[in-house]
Structures are given as C-alpha cells and as structure tokens.
Image (tube, rainbow, N blue to C red; front, side):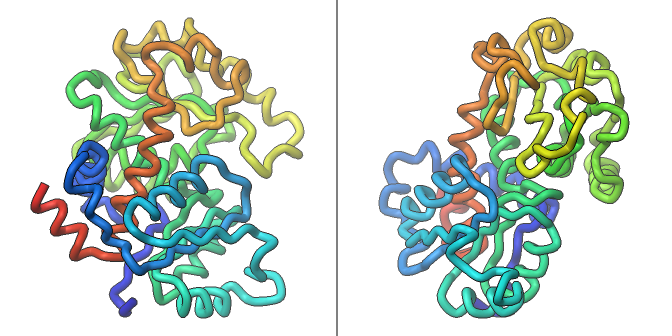
Length: 317
C-alpha cells in the first residue's frame, strides 16, 4: 500500500464520506445479485488484533472479509508480541509486509495511534478506550435505514464513553441533534466534545449535555445506552452506584416519541442499564445494529483497501 493510505481511528476521520459509506453499506446489504460476485478484497489478507475478548467485532470482521473475497486472520493478545517483547512500531512494520489491512481492538487509544503511524497498510480502530468508529457507522446506518420514521433527536443515557464519543461525531456529521445525560463526573471527553461541537456548527446540528435522563429523552427519536461498567473497569469501586436513576426503563422511555428507536451496542446487562421490557420491545433495533456492524465494516474495508472498487460499486448501484 502506498503512502496515501488512510486510517480510521475515530469516525470523524471519514466524516466527509460518512453518508456515502452508509449508503454503500445499505445498498450492498440489500443487493442479492451483483454483490454475490463482487469480491473487492480478492487476494487480500486482513489481520484483526484483539486485546479484549469480542463476539460482534470478531465475527463481523471475519465473515465480512470472507464475503468480500478476502482472507481474515485473527490474532489474539497471546498470539503476538505487540508492545511486549517487540515494540508497537516494529510489529506494525512487520505486519505491513504480510497484510493488506489491520483492525485493532485495544485498551489504550494511543496504542492504535502508534500502530497506524508505523503501518504502511490501512488501520481500523475496532475499539479503543476513546473511540469506537465502527459502532457509530453501524448506528447511523441503522438510523438511516429507518429514514423518516425517526422523529426527534438522538438521546444518550449513561456513561460519557467511547461509544458516545463517536455517536456524537457521526450523528452531528449527518445533521442529527444529540442530547446526552450522564452522571456528574462522567461527561464525555472535553477534546472529543470540542471536535463534535465544531462539526455541529458546520452541519447545523446541536449537542446538549445534562445530568437529567428525563430531560435528555423527552421528545427523542432515538434512545441509546451502554453498560455502566465497561470491560476493564470492573475494579472501579462505586462506579455502578453513581448511575442510580439512569436505567432506561419503561417509565423513562415514555417521555420519548412513541415511535422512538431503542439502541444498545451490546452486550446488554439486562436489569442494570436497561430493562427486558425495553430491550425486547418493538422499538428495539439492537440486533439490527449488531448485523449492521458487518455491513458498515465491509463498506469501510473496501473503501480503505480497494477504493477504486468501492467507488465503482457506489456509482453503479
């Protein structure tokens, strides 16, 4: 791959193309004819590195790469020496000689930044502590699929975490207003919020923060939550108690638009951040989101690893 390779570390890295990325994914998902013979990753190998266990990320990347004609290679943390006996920079240089693209699910965002810096092939952040761009691409794809039926803003209830970061960035990039409710001390990262506000000013969208879940969801067209205690935070004493009153339950969603969409990146801790009655309701699109991880990532992989093929399909569809 030449020096003009692009990396996806946060969703605003591709905010100018986000609408087309989603359109490509929706078309490909619903194309039962041409898509079967369209193999833009033929002859390519895509390596996926995992510091954290995964269900949706691993399966969606492996199946998606195969559907595109490529060869997926999964590397668990014990399989390679990344950051241990071999530097991140050297690992990136070595893997770039074997692979045509790298996805990386990690803890620290600085690690995926360093990997991308020293890699000569495209790198996709498959989740870090600061950003989750593939999830937000799937989220906005899911919202876009429902089109005009989504009436009202996107409301977030919970921790100001990596999922909220890219949801804000992606949402305002496509003109959606976003209101988030977090407990005091759990607001989104100030630098990420500053970037999102700058994008909102350009797109005409609005971002509003509060510590009151009812205020955030009133009139909402989308209600989104995530686990209160993320993977790697299990040792944080008292964090769960700080989210008292932030459960998405039947009483809270009664303040939203009647046709609201309930969203969750999964896995859901039922009875904690959300009740069974909400996650299993007719308003819930959580499994559509999970499926759309694959389709959105397929669009991203094709765009980054074979941009000519990606553009051709977009123009022909």
